[in-house]
Length: 91
Length: 370
Image 1 (cartoon, one colour):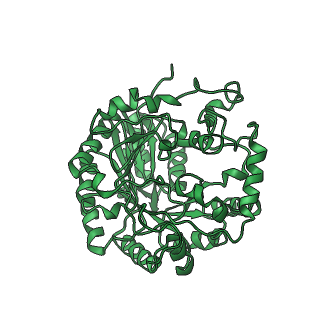
Image 2: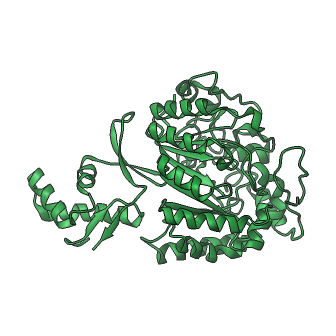
Image 3: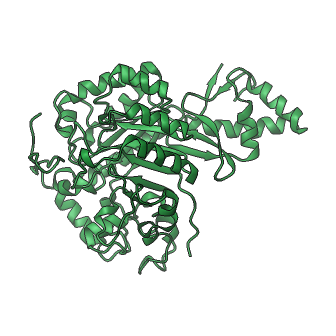
């Protein structure tokens, strides 16, 4: 995932608040992925407009954390979603 | 006492009616007739109860769910309830207009079944002439609308050589996923073990092709694979464990822990019209019958894999050994494992075995014309 990449949730993949288990999940074709607070924070910023670089900077500011660390963690998380076709990337 | 978590997925068999008559259909041998099907309002209520119970994924299946005239309002109700709504279809019965209506109703995802990669194979297996052409037309509309698509192919001795082409077709259709399932012997498939059992070599070849395709298509096409379990040494983790994550509603409203559970004669099943879904899930006798590990006998009881595969498939233990609490004979630790593998090889050698098509009692069960 490069700074200029624009991550986007494709049709059929959406965030959903699971009121029974009181947790955020990512719903995708025939899958439900439970999100931790970090996963949810990252995906909440994915809007198909902002680049990966902009998203990580925003999260770094918001959580007062080093942006390299945020970028590294988010890239791994998003790459795993991408391998499962839960995330697309526009360049 | 086993801790019971809420279910994640519900399979709603809206109807057993279907234009196809696939010889491996997972529906029971005794199909539910249209007049016994629960109505729209009952299904809508079940969807709301399911969402309240914790179900996230709803699979609308059948039979052919498009045979239900109220499919569009049912999808609407499912989405209103907050469920991720998946339509499992042969594509037959879906017009372009109807697909647009399903799109507007909020359908999340389509899973399209593939009986073969050409008309000759697909129409023979589906028992429906012209079915392949209609399916391909539906696939085109699905792609044009932009529904996320999974292609689902059932492999067996007659069509296993078509696997590479099936994977190509999934890519051509723009599918994100393909489910490659070697036929599992439940429902009508039990009647067709001689006609459909893959050879051990075929089963190996399928596994090899899947490994190769997964590496080649990483990030493009996700491949879910169910191997030919009669040729395996470890049983499948059936339903993720009985009563642990999924439930199944029959067309007439009975609630099952899995679609084949009715083959276990001592179980009784609650109906959605008679008892709240939540009570059925947590307290129903059928759901508690094989939950967790307390019901196990040896060699499962002391096995270190008992919470990995939960002893395999209860319905398979029933079908093959007459004891639903026995170790699934697919397991190498089962005293019946050797006999099962020999029987698999012997079924696979019966080259001329005819297909027995599924059907309602009054339709001839042998090769029908349509």
